[in-house]
Image 1 (cartoon, rainbow, N blue to C red):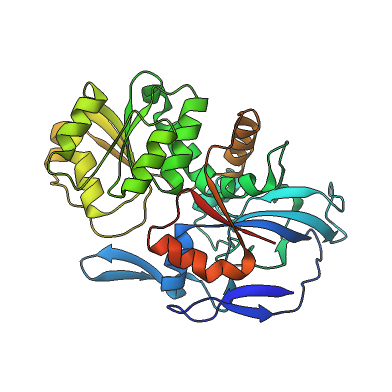
Image 2: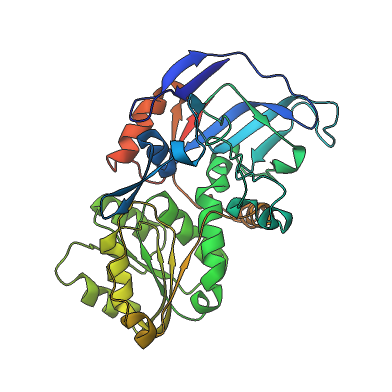
Length: 351
């Protein structure tokens, strides 16, 4: 089968012909239909994350071994399965939950495999993912019925959608009574706007330095879209919010966006941080207790939340995110365009 693999950190993906895996036990083999291109794939290609202060989190030190087929947002068609796999049929088209844990730690036992404290086996990270003709999934429970959602639109739900949905749940009571602030109008930010409307939110003010993404945010229903680089950006945000800021979600996660949110939050406010652009926290520690602010990290979501998300999106009249479809052989170009900020919504590779 053809697979686009990362063979060395810092290099482009290489097209390779590799042996199609044969499922054993509970494993299921699927033929890939669509695979989303995520900003996390850029971090994988780069070999890790900027922790700020000259520190770097190396993925090779965290159990990521090469070569590796990337792609953790995958919709695929069942073609074969091991003798212990139940409930699957040839031709089933399924969304794949990729955030697979060790299965034995306390978090995994509690259903939160996405925050596994053992040895995770995430598809597209620790195991081969969807940038290939076929993908091997360890158990049928990680395969979700699309419930009528178009396969291409469904692929980003496994990360972009799940990440935003899980974050939104953390501030939903606030978001249903007043506008919230959103940093970033990339794939996550735009997905968030669609889900916020579907879940009864009062709307969001979006901050982004890219004019094209601000336009996309307004088209997706943002109450306002503000240039974060403008000298009066914070005052514009205050005016657009129409009152104190009680909740914000930072989909960027760099020192500038974190500082913007921190300074704008009212006393008792809540900040959900999930962007991974990198750097160190810029805020003053005494202000945390003085403002009684809650800063909470959020990392993708669990399997149950992905089921909830599919139910939600299947009832929506339109897809919650603009899709930029491309053939698989444009995987490297899609990654480059994403890195350069030229992708509005989500690039999805088609097979």
